[in-house]
Image (tube, rainbow, N blue to C red; front, side, top):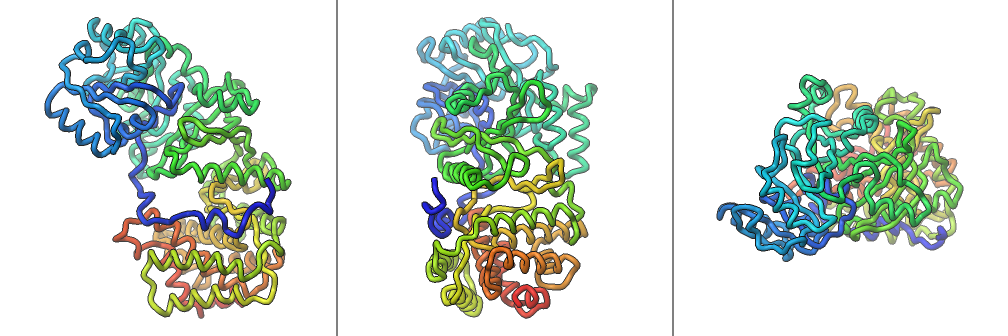
Length: 573
């Protein structure tokens, strides 16, 4: 793979940017399926009606899904869920008890117990257990959350199937879609998840989230505030002791042995683009050695494929090291989902370390890292100013299809793109991270900034866009620590009005231009086209009726209207 194989803004221009295509709350369900041995099964049977999102996931990973209902009302509910899932491989079945289901013996790979059918601390009646044993294939599994009173160490083996095998998992949050799972006996990983914030509190407001965390860890309240699930069946005996079989197979093909690694799963977030993360721990260490990232839907594979490609390219170019940059250790696919394994960058979240000031050493190091990335990858010969402007014109056309700009703003953007087109000097392309917000930065033990999540990377991207975006996210974060909750107001305070942070913005941009050999008269067009592009990305997360309220499109409007303001004047001079 050579850098010359790529074109200007190749990844950026391939994205559709359809509004509302990545709305909050539309995330896929059944996150627990990711710790199954395989995400490819023949037949699934649900006792009870699952949620729409869970049913859609089960229908994707299975060839056939049966939904067993006891009452006519449940049949109607199941049919509505089936219609919502939009799949033709789901079949509702009405029955009074599992023993009466019209299904062949040994035909079910996965039995999912829902609602009143969930396993609890009392014994399962013999005829129900016999029904389970009759329906399951020899290596079939039962998945159930554990209802009622349960403590880790309680005996469940003989309550579910005749095989006497089961594995229990600790889950968070305490209600709703499962977003965290760790084998219940792995207290070290559970403590690590708590310490690093990988668990998901039910209560988001921070003071109450701390109370929930305390209650879930306190032995006196654990029974009420902890949540568990289980896998049972003859094949469940050691599932908690090793990472999922499909993941071990992908890693093994790359020569990476994770057979004896401890593991924990995090599927946080309310956007479908958020990855499922499986942390892999060497048995002798308290911090993870690798992290496996998986897409939730094949439609988002290109994002993870792009991250894999970007990290491999950076390594080939000799940029970064294991301290400041994830290293790819394996890559593959399972059930049509992309999977990439990376080394874990050990450190603290940037927002936990920063002083939110103009002289914050961690912010300065992040700025320097992005500047050096631009300087070390600057390419003055691959594209002419005309070719660069042609790509920006395509983005502008898509932008105008989505947003309603007045004539003055529209004409101003056209003029900015034309300034690049008419530039008499060479235009440097750079390797662009693509999403260098403060949330994607770790601070290593030696105090150095490390940038994570390279799925939006652009091998031949725009200079300054990374720097502008990092500085905006840093300034709005700093403003929030001073009580300014509105991100647009934070942007105005530091990028348009004058403030102590304005000097950081101005000095950082000037130094970047010097290091990258970027003509100073290109700063202004790159500034405005950066927010145009960010508006396009934000459109995917906005409903149609909220497009004009988007943060980035209004930042763009504000910056155009206030282009004579002191900070912008100094930035562009």
